[in-house]
Length: 320
Image (cartoon, rainbow, N blue to C red):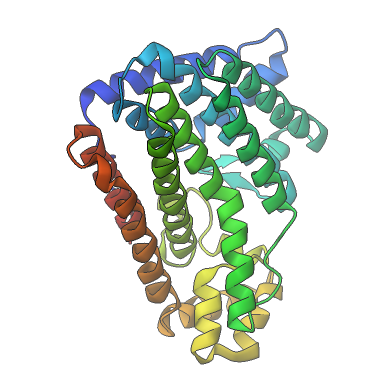
């Protein structure tokens, strides 16, 4: 997988965000401290923090004004991973055993709640009260999405409605909040804040679609978890929906109930790819990528906007 298209100055600022995040999880409780660092170490490339920093750079950039918002969004993301793993009963997160597998479920729930509380405290240090509103709405939306699983593969329209609602809540809402919070920290007018939020939302949709494609096409060492992990868990995602629509029929749809049957899972993965489910999903991700870039048009002269364009390209090309 290629490196993120960001320069050394932004990497340096991101490292300062990381230092704050890690400092916040150093507490008197050994379990919270170790479990919190365990989750944060498995949290990926910090794309949400990068979105906050770059959105601030569209305006008048001051790291001290945006650093707490960037740290808050990563703490929210880490908390959501813990709760997501509890709900999904996931075994591993990016190659690291999920918190509830290394500690019991009560401890994992406490860790997730504690990380949300840390994020709230971090928001309070940000320079504008709108930031608290954006992140609070994002957390509520994430929770709403967790309570609204995709339950049907057909008819297509119903399946798509459920799927896009789910990923809009699960992923896109926090991308949106990160961009809006960063834009506020950069002193941008509300119209610009909203435009960058729409960029973040559409980019988040594209990001999650590609994640769901990689579940079918990626290698375990690339994913940090077993391939077809979602399918094994009975989770309906866009490649499966499209493959069923392309003639996969009830047998393919029933693969979500084949947990433990590796022969059926392997056959289903091959059929999803063969019927164009992953290719059609990638095309849809590009549609959202293109929509996201339209929202950046007013900022085209800004170097940070060009970096956001590169980041959007990274999102849709990583691993596919």
